[in-house]
Length: 411
Image (cartoon, rainbow, N blue to C red; front, side, top):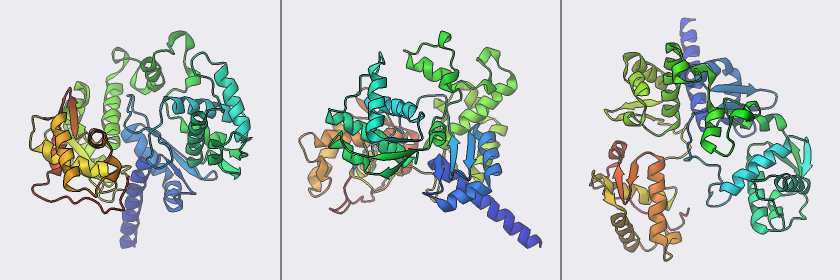
């Protein structure tokens, strides 16, 4: 009996660790897309809820009948490294117009359980036409229809919109396209992940024209006190624990120098280090500790929304090669030198990176590669110089040859 009990404990621990990492990568977990993982989340709901609440201060909601689990992640700062993306080849990030349309469309969808693409477009046109800030939505312009379709397809991917009849993509070609949708308004409301709902903001005290103030208002968590001067020692410790662990589970690497004095003090304390190690172990991560900071390694790559290094695209391969150049010069390299190194790469392997063979291809490849390195906190830019950060040393090639992908590999 004791062996059986031990096995059950091990199974529960493994399921919990896997589901934590699944939810970190997919804060909206649906039964339709991941039936096995959703079933684990349903069965281990209480343990998962307690884990996220204790370590990160995040709320987990599991709706068994509706078929989804929603992890409400919040940080308290602006992080633009994970934008909403267009569900097209290239997966370009949303621009300002698409984000504006997403907010307006979401607001209009709350009004009805069913709608058509045309009726919704008309409601969006009317709403934006009465808004003094947002430009009026015009379906006679193809670029507007394409932005609108990108928004709808994103909501379809979240299963907020379910297509009953027709194809959303047809609206790009003609505004007369007929598409019928079913709307899950409850799930739609759960997409918004803020500590304070926008409807609860005090209009008299908030400047809506200042994005930083608005974000700060909806991100303020009363659990930590209203200000540093109006918080207890327990509230400050709670904030330190949650803020450090949120960054650890959300970012590729955490450098001590990037933390505040209070955060560094907590992370460097014996209790803080023990808690970080315990949280990493319970979630199934390998914790790498260095003098400069810490990072989590998921050997199964369950919690990873984007991997590096890998050969999934030309820019990532170029990024790895540029890292070798950067690691050889810890003081940094000029962007001009990186352009030269990239041009040499392209010249050596003429069959590689065909999408970067245009006149400005070298500049685009360098820009895309540096964005990847910056997103993984491996480099930092200082005017015209790019400086490798400590974690970049993990990717030293040391003479190993990195081959270009086969001709059929594209971004």
